Length: 253
Ligand SMILES: Nc1ncnc2c1ncn2[C@@H]1O[C@H](COP(=O)(O)OP(=O)(O)OP(=O)(O)O)[C@@H](O)[C@H]1O
Ligand SMILES: [Mg+2]
Image (cartoon, rainbow, N blue to C red):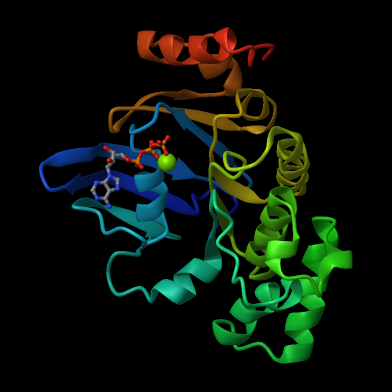
């Protein structure tokens, strides 16, 4: 494994087209250990497509993605790679027929080939971390959205990934449940977990991100610290985008 100052993940000249629709145009960015990169931008700017390319759910049209210097687009086995670069989705994507505990065990057993005792112990460890250990026997449908998302985070953590990707993890939640999920993510940032988070939670991005990336129409229009991008945006498009949040009372960052 690399030195501390070497990037874990490098995206270089990434392009993605769907038919004639150019969704990502020459995206470049690096992620270093313990980075918390928050990606912001309007609907349709390509944020999910970028995360999906990084997670091998979409195949880029051009460009490379390097994980510890290795091009993941050349012969990587998706299931093994996704154990190291996990993803948490807006809609939780839990297995509905399995208990909370089994949801968190199945990846360890199937992909990492861990035995049942190890999988159970590790699943419990991470369910405790997200405050869901008392729900091990519940099925997802019995839980609130915020609880389901915390289980989905525990499931991803149980694989002990090097990077965790989040695609709008709180957008499907009732407002009163957003806080409990953001609190878990704050804790993970505090522990030094490397994360790439697509979010519309500007106060969270301001407080937790080490770097904010503003995407606009398939390009990175601006990036920098939260102070640079959220407090003092240079780009007119960034200002325009952020003003919508101020107008909706989402200001105070
Ligand atoms: N599988 C697909 N096939 C065709 N077009 C797609 C596909 N996935 C995404 N797109 C298009 O790519 C563009 C970018 O979509 P994407 O979902 O990446 O945006 P986004 O920034 O995540 O938006 P949102 O904030 O609404 O989630 C959109 O124009 C979308 O219609
Ligand atoms: Mg999206």
